[in-house]
Image (cartoon, rainbow, N blue to C red; front, top):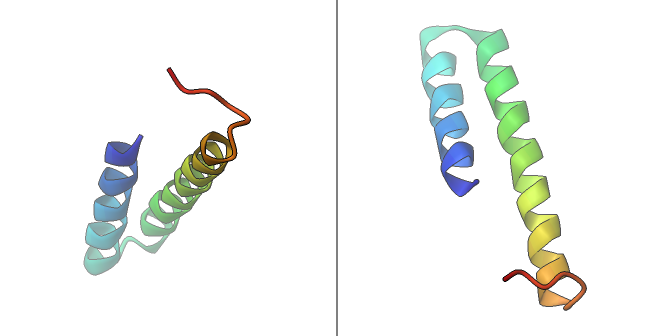
Amino acid sequence: MLQWILILLIVAAVAGLLGFGKLSGLALTGAKLLIAVVLIIFLLAVLGIVAIA
């Protein structure tokens, strides 16, 4: 999942440099969403609520 975040951030940066604002915003929104999911899973794992095997 971290690879997808990095890919989306790179796509957002390149699209922003090339002037594709909507594509850049879409990729950045996707990356933000995945970062939030990763943080929630991490916090649940740290608190011991979810056991990741």
